[in-house]
Image 1 (cartoon, one colour):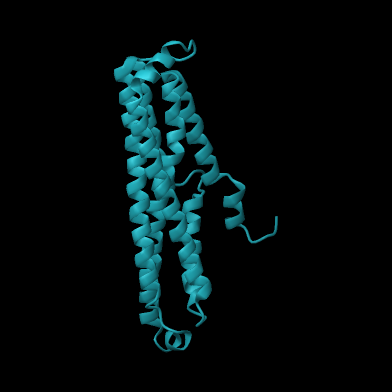
Image 2 (tube, rainbow, N blue to C red; image 1 turned 120 degrees about the vertical axis):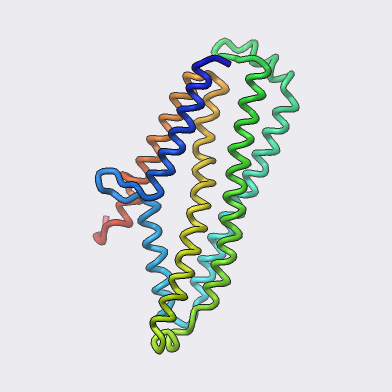
Length: 230
């Protein structure tokens, strides 16, 4: 492990923190992020559900959110298992890496350190997805407390309070899901470290700008921010 290795790792962590800050509430060129825009659409969805008594559509949406979260949680578990399997095959990997001319191999200890770091990323992602799944479950229960449309019109203040509770829980659950998904995306850049610390720097920067573009300058964001047809 050399200075450039630790520099690349520090840069990776800084980019992760900066991207989390950008999507959490910051603006680029006075642009809200895609995540922030979707939070407002979640609010619109819950308020819209108050106008109908038959809420099968809403429960299907909530079930879809939970299923997606469960899928990524399971994927993270498999990824962690793969990392432990990789640690168990260190000797074979050591033999292969020594024969590859384009790999900046840092020795067995360095390789194990990198795999442990990758395992930590997937572990972080799993806990975020697991907590998000639990919060979406809570959100479903809170959604069931919303009154029927007639009762909502009779007591608008109480209905607004109950709806706001559902909205906040839904947004928090989505925030946790996004944190886990962010870890999965950034782990792709982390894989560059197994080739070279210079490749690690390059892949981390590339992934960072790709994610920033999707959040602030993508067609998906434009679709949320405009009322005109494309």
